[in-house]
Amino acid sequence: MTPTRTRRRSDESRRGIILLFIGLIVALLLAALSQTVLSAAMPTMVGELHGVDQMLWVMTAFMLASTITMPIYGKVSDLVGRKGPLVASILLFMAGSIVGALAPDIGWLIAGRAVQGMGAGGLIILTKTIIADVVPARERGKYIGVMGAVFAVSSIAGPLLGGWITEEVGWRWTFWMNVPLGLIALVAAITLLHLPRRSTARTALDIGGMLTLGGATACLVLLASWAGGEFAWTSPVIIGLGIGMAVLTGLCAFIERRAAEPILPPRLLRDRNFALTTAAGLLLGVTMFGVISYIPTVLQLSFGADPTLAGLITTPMMGAMLVGSLGSGWLISAYGRYKWMPIAGSVVVALALLMLGLMSPATPLWLVAFELGLFGLGLGMSTQLLLLVVQNSVPAQIVGTATAGSNFFRQVGASLGSAVIGSIFTLRVTSIIGERVPESDAALIGHINSLTPERLAQFPPALHAVVADGFNDALAPLLGGMVPLALLSAVLLCFVVEHPLKTTVEPAPETAGGADLVARDDARD
View (cartoon, rainbow, N blue to C red):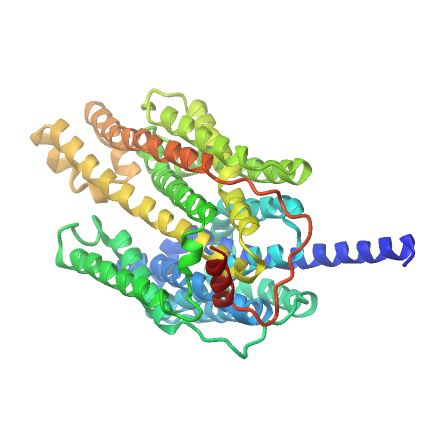
């Protein structure tokens, strides 16, 4: 073969990967935007459908469905190939979007969000898995960096886009816009994705594992969403969810040891790099959503920022996350070394949390924005690269399962971070303000949960200062208290084994399933 012909084929292959990657980015953008675009539309949406009291379920249904389906998509794609599950996830997401757009009441809206979530779980997992199938690990850093940037951009653009659509054309178009984007992703998946199809002759789906893992995940997500808010931590509902989670987790572990094709292979959970990076990702997920969920509230109630200004102050966090994700991906692809970067990122996260833990209403807003930017930079340097470490450490036969497992536990960390920090924050606010506010002013404040920036602005100056300081003093120590989580993440990552990044794509055998791989690995041990 002549050098010219080889170069031509190489260029064609590169163009094909770029076109496929664009299609995957569109698919990933669908899932990323769906998590943020409704935030601005939510009040109008639930008000028109007379479902303000069920607003929590609009978000919970999506998060629950996407988290539960992640490991299922990962395992099924390892067994039967990526194309079928990806097409199915796009179609499910589009179907859920149509149901949401046509929803006549809040029940149908929640159902549409659940179906959207079932599709989004596959979009998040399979887009990242397919890149591992077509791009060598040595070059994959820059692609994974762009994927991380998609989530950073969507977190900024989503609320702005949702607000504009709601005001200009109506909230239902936040769902309708997914149909043309979904069609683009669908065409790309059908025409550009050409991977070897796995043989299904020996496929045995782990139904028991799927049901028990899904049930345990549902209990955890609902517990994290409801505890301290909808229900007290000591209520029968929360205790029952905790017991149910423990029982189902035990049953899942029992089933997985005996399943022919376990949805989360015990061998994978014992893999050093998978275990360390997954634990680090979970810890960083707690810190990320602990900050993202409650900093805007404190900026408005303690610092007096309006919603627009609060959004501008948090923008540097997402911008720096984009820079960190893209920059780290480029550096890894250029130099091939990766272990130091997520360690450094975790340390930067710890430093930013320490600085945020010292903030007060007297802190200049530019300094808070800088600290949030530092926090985002650390996250961008670490979170996306953990997936690359996992994919580079496991054989191609289980890369889908490993990718799904890594994202699954990170999503669990996000749920825990948002819920646990939120519950403690609420308890601290109630306690601090209850202690500091004179009884004569207690009636003026009313219930903390109904306190808005507009009402706070009408308080007498002395009472306003007490309440503003109370909200800051309730959150700031919690942010500082998360420093050990980021430092523990850095320590765990120090023990990761830095395998050389693969320079070629490892072909996945068409007849070998995950169970065969585990059996061979165990035999070698």
